Length: 271
Image (cartoon, rainbow, N blue to C red; front, side, top):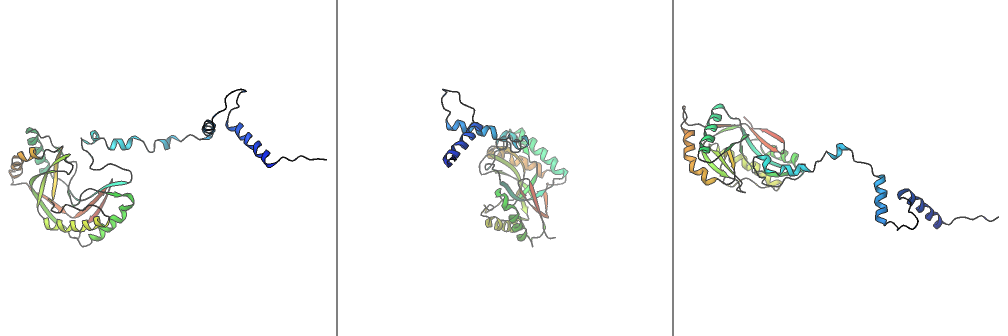
């Protein structure tokens, strides 16, 4: 008896034919052959599972475009492009305004508006001890650890501000009315040196060489430096002409803060 065994090549051809029947519809007699690419796409489309809705909405495409839209931020323009994993970071002392300060600020805004310069009050008030730099997410913890170690022996103090001064950012996109510090300058410089050491360690830009420490009170879009300087003397008279004497902004420098993205790290100073 003769037994016929199929060769390996015949088995492979049979398996290939079976796969072809599963992934592709049968061709009619006399029809043109389908391109290989079309066969592959047809096969994939039948086997690919749909992406769950929860995953589709997890990372919306519009997020980055919205963060760059200046109309959503009062016309303000970012100093650097928003990118995932980059955290805008700066070091500062927070100032908690008292009632007299709020009354004075309203008068300053009203007076500047009467001269054609519409200022917007700051949402928060602080005294910066660093420029705004970009931290990668994985740098945050080691950066804070380095900063905390440098501040170990830094002591609490009080600084005062009282003279108005006009500032403009490097990009000339925003102008600020600030109140400049005139006491506590030496202690602030000591802290800047400590902070600069950490910034240098991470190859980030350090603070200005000859800083004018101040608390920004209000801002406007664009470079209106000259317009604001023209009315600064009149605005200063509102600061100096209070019933109980010139207004002084006293800042208790007891806790240094570092904000990175939406996180705030606190560094209490020694008493």
